[in-house]
Length: 295
Image (cartoon, rainbow, N blue to C red):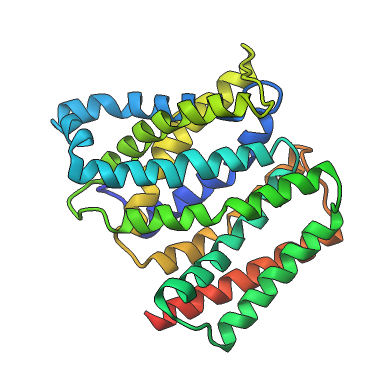
Protein backbone atom coordinates (compact mmCIF):
# COMPACT_ATOMS: atom_id res chain seq x y z
CA UNK A 1 0.00 0.00 0.00
CA UNK A 2 2.80 2.42 0.86
CA UNK A 3 5.59 1.19 -1.41
CA UNK A 4 4.77 3.74 -4.13
CA UNK A 5 4.80 6.69 -1.72
CA UNK A 6 7.77 8.60 -0.37
CA UNK A 7 7.92 9.18 3.41
CA UNK A 8 7.10 12.87 2.87
CA UNK A 9 4.03 12.09 0.75
CA UNK A 10 2.84 9.57 3.34
CA UNK A 11 3.35 12.16 6.08
CA UNK A 12 1.18 14.80 4.37
CA UNK A 13 -1.61 12.31 3.74
CA UNK A 14 -1.49 11.33 7.41
CA UNK A 15 -1.60 15.01 8.38
CA UNK A 16 -4.82 15.69 6.49
CA UNK A 17 -6.42 12.55 7.89
CA UNK A 18 -5.37 13.58 11.41
CA UNK A 19 -6.90 17.05 11.01
CA UNK A 20 -10.36 15.48 10.91
CA UNK A 21 -10.18 13.27 13.99
CA UNK A 22 -11.06 15.98 16.56
CA UNK A 23 -14.00 16.89 14.29
CA UNK A 24 -15.03 13.23 14.31
CA UNK A 25 -14.80 13.08 18.10
CA UNK A 26 -17.05 16.12 18.45
CA UNK A 27 -19.57 14.73 15.94
CA UNK A 28 -19.82 11.57 18.05
CA UNK A 29 -20.98 13.44 21.19
CA UNK A 30 -24.45 12.20 22.10
CA UNK A 31 -24.33 9.42 19.50
CA UNK A 32 -21.40 7.16 20.40
CA UNK A 33 -19.56 7.25 23.75
CA UNK A 34 -15.75 7.69 23.57
CA UNK A 35 -14.81 4.18 24.66
CA UNK A 36 -17.25 2.48 22.29
CA UNK A 37 -16.20 4.69 19.36
CA UNK A 38 -12.51 3.93 19.89
CA UNK A 39 -13.13 0.21 20.45
CA UNK A 40 -15.23 -0.18 17.30
CA UNK A 41 -12.77 1.94 15.32
CA UNK A 42 -9.79 -0.16 16.42
CA UNK A 43 -11.66 -3.41 15.84
CA UNK A 44 -12.76 -2.30 12.36
CA UNK A 45 -9.15 -1.39 11.51
CA UNK A 46 -7.94 -4.84 12.54
CA UNK A 47 -10.70 -6.55 10.53
CA UNK A 48 -9.75 -4.48 7.46
CA UNK A 49 -6.11 -5.53 7.85
CA UNK A 50 -6.94 -9.17 8.66
CA UNK A 51 -7.11 -10.44 5.03
CA UNK A 52 -3.70 -8.87 4.38
CA UNK A 53 -2.27 -10.50 7.53
CA UNK A 54 -3.61 -13.89 6.46
CA UNK A 55 -2.44 -13.50 2.84
CA UNK A 56 1.09 -12.58 3.90
CA UNK A 57 1.13 -15.24 6.63
CA UNK A 58 1.76 -12.62 9.33
CA UNK A 59 -1.29 -13.12 11.55
CA UNK A 60 0.64 -15.37 13.95
CA UNK A 61 3.33 -12.69 14.22
CA UNK A 62 0.84 -10.39 15.97
CA UNK A 63 1.09 -12.80 18.91
CA UNK A 64 4.87 -13.28 18.70
CA UNK A 65 6.11 -12.22 22.19
CA UNK A 66 9.09 -10.29 20.77
CA UNK A 67 6.81 -8.20 18.54
CA UNK A 68 3.69 -8.27 20.68
CA UNK A 69 5.35 -6.34 23.51
CA UNK A 70 5.91 -3.37 21.18
CA UNK A 71 2.45 -3.67 19.62
CA UNK A 72 0.88 -3.76 23.08
CA UNK A 73 2.83 -0.65 24.09
CA UNK A 74 1.74 1.41 21.07
CA UNK A 75 -1.79 -0.01 21.40
CA UNK A 76 -1.97 1.28 24.97
CA UNK A 77 0.00 4.53 24.74
CA UNK A 78 -0.81 5.59 21.16
CA UNK A 79 -4.41 4.37 20.89
CA UNK A 80 -6.31 3.38 24.02
CA UNK A 81 -5.22 5.87 26.70
CA UNK A 82 -4.49 9.16 24.88
CA UNK A 83 -7.39 9.00 22.43
CA UNK A 84 -9.79 7.99 25.18
CA UNK A 85 -8.70 11.08 27.12
CA UNK A 86 -8.96 13.22 23.97
CA UNK A 87 -12.47 12.05 23.11
CA UNK A 88 -13.62 12.51 26.70
CA UNK A 89 -12.19 16.04 26.52
CA UNK A 90 -14.19 16.67 23.32
CA UNK A 91 -17.38 16.15 25.34
CA UNK A 92 -16.58 19.57 26.78
CA UNK A 93 -14.15 21.48 24.56
CA UNK A 94 -13.97 22.29 20.83
CA UNK A 95 -12.00 20.43 18.15
CA UNK A 96 -9.69 23.39 17.50
CA UNK A 97 -8.92 23.87 21.21
CA UNK A 98 -8.13 20.17 21.58
CA UNK A 99 -5.84 20.10 18.54
CA UNK A 100 -3.96 23.27 19.53
CA UNK A 101 -3.46 22.13 23.13
CA UNK A 102 -2.26 18.78 21.80
CA UNK A 103 0.97 20.56 20.81
CA UNK A 104 2.04 20.51 24.49
CA UNK A 105 3.23 16.98 23.68
CA UNK A 106 6.52 18.59 22.62
CA UNK A 107 6.85 20.31 25.97
CA UNK A 108 6.46 16.98 27.73
CA UNK A 109 9.10 15.55 25.39
CA UNK A 110 11.52 18.27 26.48
CA UNK A 111 10.82 17.66 30.17
CA UNK A 112 11.14 13.87 29.89
CA UNK A 113 14.41 14.21 27.99
CA UNK A 114 15.74 16.53 30.70
CA UNK A 115 14.71 14.18 33.53
CA UNK A 116 15.71 10.81 32.09
CA UNK A 117 18.55 11.72 29.71
CA UNK A 118 20.01 14.70 31.53
CA UNK A 119 19.78 16.96 28.44
CA UNK A 120 19.34 20.47 29.80
CA UNK A 121 17.31 22.79 27.53
CA UNK A 122 19.19 25.61 25.78
CA UNK A 123 17.97 29.18 25.26
CA UNK A 124 16.10 28.41 22.04
CA UNK A 125 14.32 25.50 23.70
CA UNK A 126 13.37 27.69 26.65
CA UNK A 127 12.06 30.35 24.25
CA UNK A 128 10.06 27.75 22.31
CA UNK A 129 8.67 26.37 25.56
CA UNK A 130 7.72 29.88 26.73
CA UNK A 131 5.86 30.58 23.47
CA UNK A 132 4.07 27.25 23.65
CA UNK A 133 3.07 27.79 27.27
CA UNK A 134 1.90 31.35 26.48
CA UNK A 135 -0.34 30.02 23.69
CA UNK A 136 -1.80 27.39 26.00
CA UNK A 137 -2.43 29.94 28.77
CA UNK A 138 -4.24 32.29 26.37
CA UNK A 139 -6.57 29.50 25.26
CA UNK A 140 -7.16 28.33 28.83
CA UNK A 141 -7.87 31.86 30.06
CA UNK A 142 -10.61 32.35 27.47
CA UNK A 143 -12.58 29.43 28.92
CA UNK A 144 -11.43 29.44 32.55
CA UNK A 145 -13.74 27.83 35.10
CA UNK A 146 -16.24 26.75 32.44
CA UNK A 147 -17.19 23.21 31.34
CA UNK A 148 -15.03 23.77 28.24
CA UNK A 149 -12.05 24.48 30.52
CA UNK A 150 -12.45 20.97 31.94
CA UNK A 151 -11.91 19.49 28.49
CA UNK A 152 -8.87 21.69 27.88
CA UNK A 153 -7.27 20.52 31.14
CA UNK A 154 -7.86 16.86 30.23
CA UNK A 155 -6.02 17.38 26.92
CA UNK A 156 -2.89 18.98 28.35
CA UNK A 157 -2.81 16.40 31.16
CA UNK A 158 -2.71 13.40 28.83
CA UNK A 159 -0.65 14.25 25.73
CA UNK A 160 2.59 12.95 27.29
CA UNK A 161 1.25 9.45 26.58
CA UNK A 162 1.87 9.93 22.84
CA UNK A 163 5.60 10.41 23.40
CA UNK A 164 5.85 7.12 25.27
CA UNK A 165 4.11 5.34 22.39
CA UNK A 166 6.37 7.01 19.79
CA UNK A 167 9.45 5.76 21.65
CA UNK A 168 8.21 2.17 21.49
CA UNK A 169 7.29 2.61 17.80
CA UNK A 170 10.81 3.74 16.94
CA UNK A 171 12.28 0.73 18.78
CA UNK A 172 10.28 -1.83 16.82
CA UNK A 173 12.19 -4.29 14.63
CA UNK A 174 13.01 -2.64 11.30
CA UNK A 175 11.49 -5.43 9.23
CA UNK A 176 7.96 -4.71 10.46
CA UNK A 177 5.84 -3.02 7.80
CA UNK A 178 3.58 0.02 8.48
CA UNK A 179 0.55 -2.16 7.65
CA UNK A 180 1.58 -4.77 10.24
CA UNK A 181 2.17 -2.14 12.93
CA UNK A 182 -1.20 -0.47 12.28
CA UNK A 183 -2.99 -3.83 12.45
CA UNK A 184 -1.21 -4.93 15.62
CA UNK A 185 -1.69 -1.56 17.29
CA UNK A 186 -5.41 -1.68 16.51
CA UNK A 187 -5.78 -5.24 17.81
CA UNK A 188 -4.13 -4.61 21.17
CA UNK A 189 -5.68 -1.15 21.43
CA UNK A 190 -9.14 -2.71 21.14
CA UNK A 191 -8.26 -5.23 23.85
CA UNK A 192 -7.17 -2.50 26.27
CA UNK A 193 -10.27 -0.43 25.50
CA UNK A 194 -12.63 -3.12 26.83
CA UNK A 195 -11.67 -2.77 30.54
CA UNK A 196 -11.10 0.99 30.17
CA UNK A 197 -14.60 1.52 28.77
CA UNK A 198 -16.05 -0.67 31.52
CA UNK A 199 -14.13 1.33 34.13
CA UNK A 200 -15.63 4.57 32.80
CA UNK A 201 -19.14 3.32 33.61
CA UNK A 202 -18.20 3.43 37.30
CA UNK A 203 -17.21 7.08 36.80
CA UNK A 204 -20.66 8.01 35.52
CA UNK A 205 -19.99 7.76 31.78
CA UNK A 206 -22.70 5.57 30.21
CA UNK A 207 -22.16 3.36 27.18
CA UNK A 208 -23.96 5.01 24.26
CA UNK A 209 -24.38 3.99 20.64
CA UNK A 210 -27.39 5.36 18.77
CA UNK A 211 -28.13 3.80 15.37
CA UNK A 212 -27.87 6.71 12.93
CA UNK A 213 -26.00 7.89 9.84
CA UNK A 214 -23.79 10.10 12.02
CA UNK A 215 -22.82 7.14 14.22
CA UNK A 216 -21.95 5.11 11.13
CA UNK A 217 -19.85 7.96 9.66
CA UNK A 218 -17.72 8.47 12.79
CA UNK A 219 -17.16 4.74 13.32
CA UNK A 220 -16.16 4.17 9.69
CA UNK A 221 -13.87 7.21 9.77
CA UNK A 222 -12.13 6.08 12.98
CA UNK A 223 -11.75 2.49 11.77
CA UNK A 224 -11.20 2.65 8.02
CA UNK A 225 -9.65 6.11 7.57
CA UNK A 226 -7.91 7.22 10.76
CA UNK A 227 -6.79 3.96 12.40
CA UNK A 228 -6.04 2.16 9.15
CA UNK A 229 -4.77 4.58 6.51
CA UNK A 230 -3.75 7.37 8.90
CA UNK A 231 -1.56 5.06 10.98
CA UNK A 232 -0.13 3.19 7.99
CA UNK A 233 1.00 6.45 6.38
CA UNK A 234 2.29 7.81 9.71
CA UNK A 235 4.46 4.76 10.37
CA UNK A 236 5.68 4.84 6.78
CA UNK A 237 6.87 8.40 7.50
CA UNK A 238 8.44 8.12 10.97
CA UNK A 239 10.19 4.82 10.29
CA UNK A 240 11.89 6.25 7.20
CA UNK A 241 12.69 9.83 8.28
CA UNK A 242 13.75 11.75 11.36
CA UNK A 243 10.96 11.85 13.99
CA UNK A 244 11.55 15.55 14.73
CA UNK A 245 11.12 16.42 11.04
CA UNK A 246 7.90 14.42 10.82
CA UNK A 247 6.65 16.08 14.00
CA UNK A 248 7.46 19.53 12.62
CA UNK A 249 5.21 18.93 9.62
CA UNK A 250 2.47 17.30 11.70
CA UNK A 251 2.42 20.40 13.93
CA UNK A 252 0.43 22.24 11.27
CA UNK A 253 -2.63 19.98 11.52
CA UNK A 254 -4.39 22.19 14.15
CA UNK A 255 -4.56 24.96 11.53
CA UNK A 256 -6.60 22.70 9.25
CA UNK A 257 -8.69 21.43 12.18
CA UNK A 258 -9.46 25.04 13.16
CA UNK A 259 -10.54 25.96 9.62
CA UNK A 260 -12.74 22.87 9.26
CA UNK A 261 -14.20 23.31 12.75
CA UNK A 262 -15.20 26.93 12.03
CA UNK A 263 -16.61 26.01 8.61
CA UNK A 264 -18.82 23.32 10.20
CA UNK A 265 -20.02 25.66 12.94
CA UNK A 266 -18.31 23.70 15.73
CA UNK A 267 -16.12 26.63 16.71
CA UNK A 268 -15.87 30.40 16.40
CA UNK A 269 -13.03 32.67 15.38
CA UNK A 270 -11.73 34.73 18.29
CA UNK A 271 -8.68 36.82 19.07
CA UNK A 272 -7.83 34.49 21.96
CA UNK A 273 -7.89 31.42 19.77
CA UNK A 274 -5.86 32.92 16.92
CA UNK A 275 -3.26 34.33 19.33
CA UNK A 276 -3.04 31.00 21.15
CA UNK A 277 -2.69 29.12 17.87
CA UNK A 278 0.07 31.40 16.58
CA UNK A 279 2.07 31.33 19.83
CA UNK A 280 1.69 27.58 20.40
CA UNK A 281 2.54 26.79 16.79
CA UNK A 282 5.60 29.09 16.85
CA UNK A 283 6.88 27.60 20.09
CA UNK A 284 6.33 24.01 18.98
CA UNK A 285 7.99 24.65 15.61
CA UNK A 286 11.01 26.26 17.31
CA UNK A 287 11.35 23.25 19.61
CA UNK A 288 11.38 20.81 16.69
CA UNK A 289 14.00 22.90 14.86
CA UNK A 290 16.26 22.74 17.92
CA UNK A 291 15.78 18.97 18.20
CA UNK A 292 16.54 18.56 14.47
CA UNK A 293 19.67 20.74 14.83
CA UNK A 294 20.94 18.58 17.68
CA UNK A 295 20.53 15.44 15.62
